[in-house]
Image (cartoon, rainbow, N blue to C red):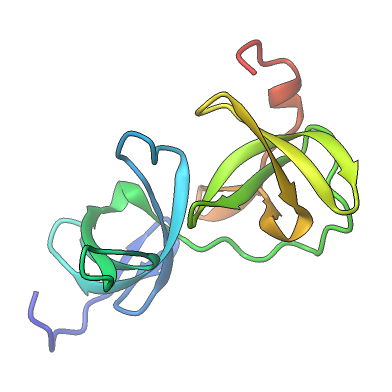
Length: 157
């Protein structure tokens, strides 16, 4: 599309426009399950977009730009009410390696520290409260908090 065209694409209640703040899901091995902050810098045809990442850089140390389809992009989740303390089995996103990774709190250590288990790479890691947020999924045009019950009875955890 031409740079001077004003185009708005809507999907699931979110307007994809140049300048929209988004999160991008990694699809490469080692990045699956992580969400990275970015901004839409160009609209393409067939629900494809060029996104510039906030923290990821290219070989020249410039912000990385990547063309992606709509399956890999979602609006940024809203801030949830401040959580004074996360609890055992809370599903959280942990900020690690420049992205938000989905995990489950498996230990509350005190001093605002937690151990989080990541199913995607079967590993536990320690995080400070400031590196965590409650996990939310973008479904049916709204953000939905996950249920702990799904994980308590999941044999694969």
